[in-house]
Amino acid sequence: MLFILDIFGTAVFAITGSLVGKQKQMDLFGVLVIALVTALGGGTLRDILLGRLPVFWISQPEIIVICLVAGLFTFYTSEKLTYPRRTLLLSDAIGLATFSVIGAQTAIEYHPIIAIIMGGMTGTAGGMIRDLLSDEIPVILRRDIYATAAMTGASVFVLLHHGNVSTDLALFLGATVTLLVRLLAIRRRWNLPKTT
Image (cartoon, rainbow, N blue to C red; front, side):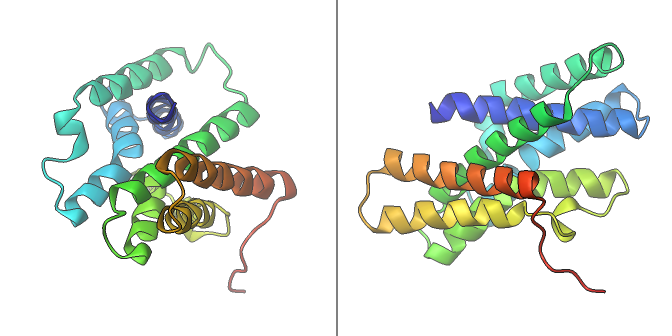
């Protein structure tokens, strides 16, 4: 199930990146680059910081193919198909939930704080790079409950793992918490305090 969600999350992040590229009127190459960095940026940064080389997509090149197919599909259909905002937000939240616990699990042998940070980074850094390349202030640096949701779910996973809960159950519950926090934040318009 986690593998399926990982593939789904990768495709969704690539699609959301592609839509941003199209919105910024990038050419096909630019759209594909944005699709790749959105989907792969967080995991790549995590692997580099943890010294897990080669990074995950070098040993799993099929992930690159998924990103490119999603990017091409979006590039050629975005003007003909409507991508409902709610569907995109839900899909993005599922991707965030999946990546946050995968990132935390990848770093679970380190200090719990490191595992939590890596969970948050895996879920959000790709979007941050996308926004920077698109000349936007990254979403996670504004008020949106996004990185907070990822790190909350990663924290639940880490706590349960260290409490000797089975890995599968800990992953499921951690991802569920991320998903619920993110969806509640969207529905109720929760935001973090900001400077005035």
